[in-house]
Amino acid sequence: MSGAFADINVSLTEHIATVEIDRPPHNFFDRDLIGQIADAYGELDDDSRCRAAVLCSTGKSFCAGANFGSGQEDRSGNEEFTEDGFRNTTGQLYREGVRLFSAKTPVVAAVQGAAIGGGLGLALTADFRVGAPEARFAANFVKLGIHPGFGLTVTLPNLIGQQRANLMFLTGRRIKGEEALALGLIDQLVPLDEVRSAAHALAGEIAENAPLAIGSVRTTVRQGLAERIARATDHELAEQQWLRATEDAAEGIRAVAGRRPGNFQGR
Image 1 (tube, rainbow, N blue to C red):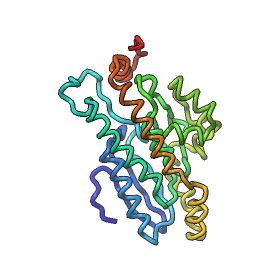
Image 2 (cartoon, rainbow, N blue to C red; image 1 turned 180 degrees about the horizontal axis):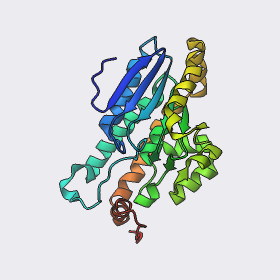
Image 3 (cartoon, rainbow, N blue to C red; image 1 turned 90 degrees about the horizontal axis):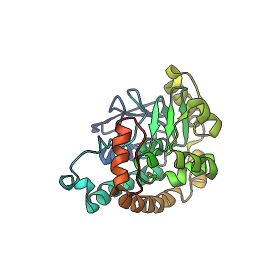
Image 4 (cartoon, helix red, strand yellow; image 1 turned 30 degrees about the vertical axis):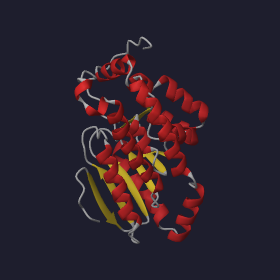
């Protein structure tokens, strides 16, 4: 491994890689972080010693999504809030996200805490998820006044079914670890202090098998997924773009930052 990553730690032991997000306590993501993970996956794909990977995080949250701040920024002075700036910044982030779905190495996510919004999207890039009762999952975009992103309109219905995904999308509710297991959001539920070791054990089960066969099967079952994500994120971005310019979106960001219900006006 190159080792030249600012916000992630990458190691490889006995055919299993560990890709650890290191932005505690909540591991908010941006384009640079997703790009670093994608670069690490690319290096692991090219390393014949690596047969499976564990995606994990330091700190309290797995990934609490993007850090929108208070919502009180001067939008006229922030290029990310302009029409072109938002499309360019978020569009580039989503292109980096598509690279995660294109990676060849099987990934197990170790979800020890909150996976919220885009953080849920990041967790769903993995093949499997191991979680704790303390973990929380939410597609809370409507509480922010915007449209779901990070390919969640594809990955979440694929995983738990369209109706259950609709319930999460339209309520923005948080799902606890036990319910996440029942829904199929996670594959294993273990005590908090065992999440990472259980994820490595599952990765080990994968890694002990014939690597060429694993690659062949995974390519078949994920056929066309990256292309579907690319098309979905183009649409998600277009919807997010016009909604981001609304008063409701500004209120939603303030409300979530202030841990209160939004006072939405439909404009």
